[in-house]
Length: 188
Image (cartoon, rainbow, N blue to C red; front, side, top):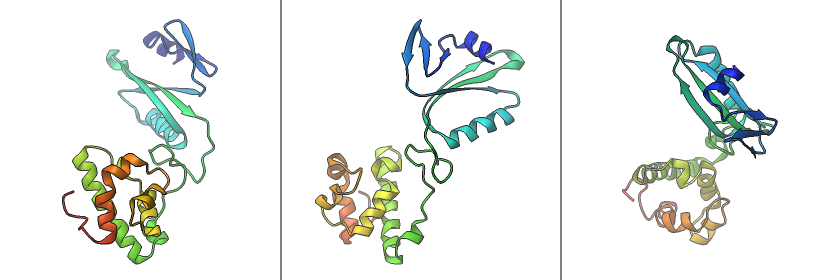
C-alpha cells in the first residue's frame, strides 16, 4: 500500500514524525497514519479507519480518491495526537475525551428544565447563524450557567471558554431566558 500511496500522492512520505512536501521536510510534531479504503468493498478497511478515529484525537485528514476502474480507492493521511484516552472513545469534537455526561443525573429537575430551554435556544441561534450548536455554547457551558444561576454578563465571563465575543453576541438572549424575561422559543 505504501508504494501505491506514494505513486498517487507523491508528497506523502512518512519520515518518522514529519513528511516531505515539494522536496522539503516539514516537522509536524505528530504522528501520521495512512489508510487505503477500496471503493468496491470498503467494509473491513472502513471499520479499521472508524475504530482508529474514535480512539484518537484527530488534527487533520487529507483524503484523495484514486480512480483505477475496478481497483479505485480512497487514500487517507490522518494527523493525530498521541494522547491517552480517558473513559473511552472520542465523540467527534475536539477535546471530548471524557464520556458523555447525562445532565439529567447531574442537574436537579428544575435545573434540567432550564438547561433544556437553553439548549433549544442555542439550537435556534445556531440555525439562524449557520453555525454548529457547540460554536454558540457547549453543553458544559450551558450546564454551568444553570448550576451557577448566572444572571449577569460578568457571571457569564467567569465560565470557562466564554469570552467577550460570545458575551456580546449572546448574553442578552441567554440571560433573558435564565431570568425568565424572555421565552426560549421566541425568535432571537
